Image 1 (tube, rainbow, N blue to C red):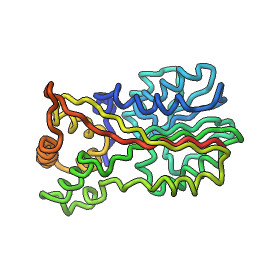
Image 2 (image 1 turned 180 degrees about the vertical axis):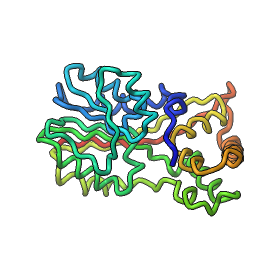
Image 3 (image 1 turned 30 degrees about the vertical axis):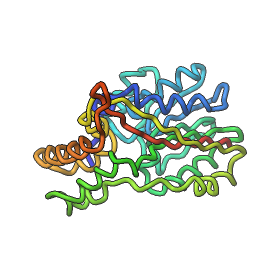
Image 4 (image 1 turned 90 degrees about the horizontal axis):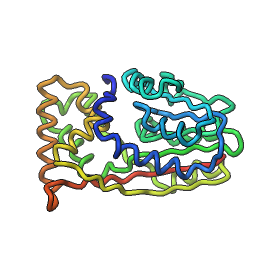
Length: 256
């Protein structure tokens, strides 16, 4: 899969930064020695951590060179490293592991979350936020379009749809035995979008990327046109011509 685009992702920076801000507000730490932002992207979530904990060492980790380039431009005094979350292990001084909209991309991510939580010192915090929107029209349409057209038998396109998140009960049973406190909650954001085409632009920076990456330029345009047409039917304009993008997210905060 080709690299993620920081420029595309940041088209909706304000909306994308609300969930990590809401998650960070619940972190019960005063001055972590080391805070690591997993899947830091272009550094918008890392910046929040730096502002919240100005005396702490903050490190951003991501697998995308383009995202890391943008993050380093944004926060030149912060350390950013390229790495794979699935195999990464925290330094013993890590008091906060923060993951904003990244764990849902990893196979067996609950097992990875438990491993990371167990690696934290007593009182350390694992704070995770994930989109829980696979049943929303915008996500269902991606799968439907992927299953039609000339790309339907492409192995990467067939593998592109995200699975539903496990149940709250599953997360509880896996994480609660290895932490002293576990909070989990959902927040549904209703983002005001200029048009259904803006919904397409939003997801081009995230969950549409695995569908589009293996396609030719011509097929990408066909895919996006088919997807946008479905969004036009489902997301009706409000009185001012704008549309509302309903976006549920799951928050998990575990204290070791």
